Length: 115
Image (cartoon, rainbow, N blue to C red):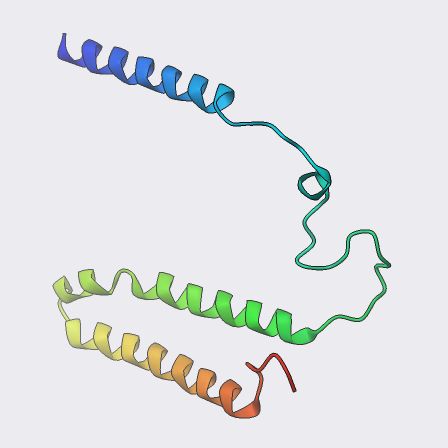
């Protein structure tokens, strides 16, 4: 009986929230909202204009450090393995390599937007 009550409550609440989310927002489309998002580029201009490669370098660095966080998320559970020191050694090695790469990019001036 309790499972049926919980299921009915969940379905009712979901239905109410879905209905509210469709009818509550104000729809006022204008020229800016209807134009496609092109990462700061003019969508009506030529597609052959030169662009800054620094934008893509920063994006790749962001993805690299985002991946690093995903790789280090299971680290707290590594303490329960038979050899936790080995797990911490590899995590420290990954962090050291990424830190050295970041310092190298910084020293080369790859993180500067303006020359």
